[in-house]
Length: 246
Image 1 (tube, rainbow, N blue to C red):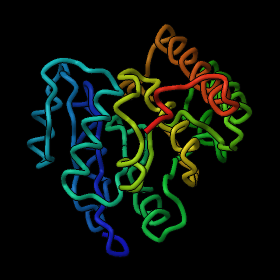
Image 2 (image 1 turned 60 degrees about the horizontal axis):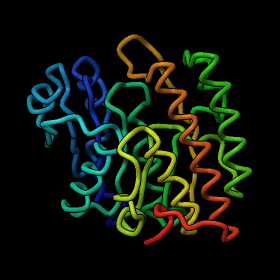
Image 3 (image 1 turned 30 degrees about the horizontal axis):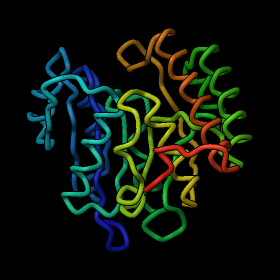
Image 4 (image 1 turned 90 degrees about the vertical axis):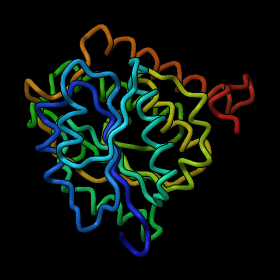
């Protein structure tokens, strides 16, 4: 706990057996009250490794996608009474050591959501992010900041913290079950006027770390552009978008 707030870490997992233990061992157990892993029908022994480590484990019988996995993660964390929920990829690409700092920014009332940014500082390229992904990240972030009227260093990190109120109020059920879920969720947070903070986060790209392929990256990028345009059109009253309505 921090400042009387119960903290849960959720791990949306898919074929993470090789990196799960490294990730789990660095989670600050002195502050984290619950750790939940949702295995999205992995083809390896992710669930078995999680249970061996004593992690509360939920297994999807069929693959629901990254967004569908997160929906289960957040619903479970809220059912467990979490006041702050940190979503962390179990592929060891992001350091769990930032959990305490991110949770504190919410626990003490400064922000409603916190993102661990790979772009602040020199973390992304230094950590091995492919150049094409870095360029795409910068372009998409520029476009989103323009359309959303907000300013973030990146919208595409897989390391995020949320208050209970954010998770309860956002219409997450309306979001995609694919990778663009992440982006839709941030657009919703901006839409409903919640405060977003950022911390600088080093990142590690290596063979076992999860990374979507080029084709899926293109699909994700097009989804990001669509979400940003929908946000702007809805803001000026030219259309009604389901994900921005309670």
